Length: 262
Image 1 (cartoon, rainbow, N blue to C red):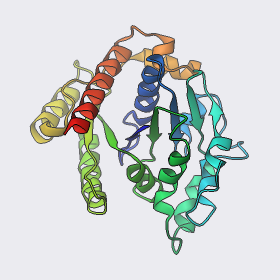
Image 2 (cartoon, rainbow, N blue to C red):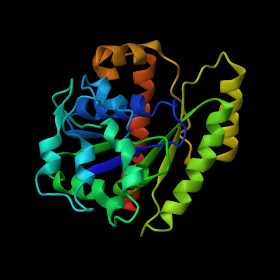
Image 3 (cartoon, rainbow, N blue to C red):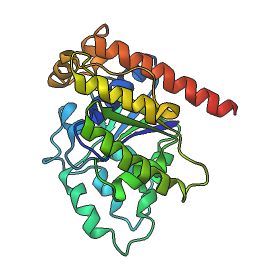
């Protein structure tokens, strides 16, 4: 299994859309995918038609066992999605209470890594949608992943958020045996606006080594796919957004292959 985390410490940058778009394209290519919703807002869970406020069980249950994960629990928590090759490990609003519960509990930072280890043979890919907050949930996402995708909305405040995210990653990497490779993905790009053009130039100047050279454009078809509860490629495989995400997926797989060879 390959594990990718999608994270940024700023909200509204396209994390959930990016997670689901990549998962949908992987599933379309025949891969078995598990998507993990670690955001207490539950946007990914809601996207696929499940109510994070009403679920009796969710990814929150994984954190209730002093850092260990009972055998079989991750599999029991999985829910169906609109795509037969994608399973969802759902979120619930209870995840928001973890920060208050976690002090004094050791091992909570590796709960998701341990959970995915139990699903290792059942899926080819895992895509983790992280909350826009540095805490135990984001630490779990980064600790479990082999590759990080950082969506950045092409506007000024999002670049400030990216600075915080890169700083956080540097801190996390000090506790890892191997630095986590990451790719910055410009999102919600609108070439008609000065803000988008200026931000893209800033990203290319300051983060070129880790920047995906293209961008995800503003595309109402992505919002329409969300409303329909379908992955973007299920909804409209030829939309501008899906074409861009297909190029991004090709880039990420090429990076992954190069890292394995190295």
